[in-house]
Image (cartoon, rainbow, N blue to C red; front, side, top):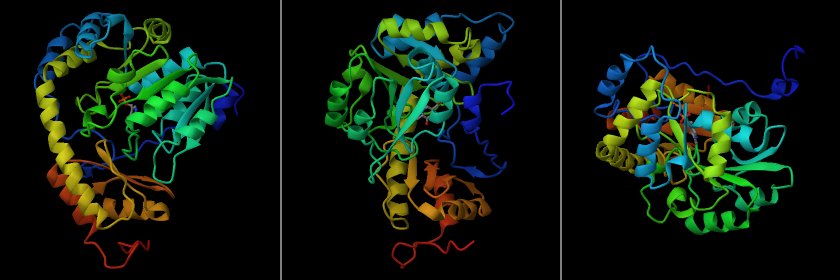
Length: 360
Ligand SMILES: Cc1ncc(COP(=O)(O)O)c(C=O)c1O
């Protein structure tokens, strides 16, 4: 505590920067491995000729394209420097001043940090043993101090989704004056038609905000572009706290080009979904209890063996993402990258429950 900065930030964990050695197969950051979508590099290169000018602060063309693509009015769309930034802005608009933000846990590791940065107070609600959001407990955690409820669907790091009836019942039950934000960063990877599309099915609810990103399926992680769709009045409030010009000119150009390449995005997602099935089968022969993933990652619930497992992979040139004492998240990569992971893990063992020698 220095006395110079907000005391509450002392208790907030700092971001952990994971260094990925250059020649490693990186299966730790939930990106899509196929490079930018066609047309994106050219659009960005073209936009660099005008970077001495400020970008369109309202990102009008991009916002209109998103609004048309998702069939909503443009005034309901807010773009930002990644959905992570928009989560912080949303907290600032709904829960700053210590308002409570109810969210599932384990979930996206940045939530506690973004909530604190936005001036809210994180209220983590443990997921059920099968990794689903405990929606009953989340509802019970809503109090008069709650400013925002955050659902992660499908959840990072497990890929576990919320069923259509569960989501509808939850949204019916939350008091209508509390905003429920559904973070659908991985929505494009959902292939099961029984799962809900929050925007299409619940976007009309005034208190529902849907967060999407162009970092994942759309392949723009490095340029920082996300958006949310909210009730027009909620969107207007969020726009007031967005850092001006934070949807930069290159991101606007890249986003428009990526949207034009949607068929190729869909093709890539189909390739990854098939790899997800293959990897789930192959890894389930080695690890018990891998939940069905609807995202571009798989969760290995190996508990205390998480760090050892990650180290074993790293020694064999594959970077994965361990969560100490809980498990390991692996991103679905190309077929070759996934094979490298399987090679790094070695063959399944006959010993039940213990698939590798994980003695340090
Ligand atoms: C669930 C979830 N939400 C949001 C984000 C942030 O994405 P970005 O800020 O790149 O849009 C991530 C990134 O990993 C994520 O997993």
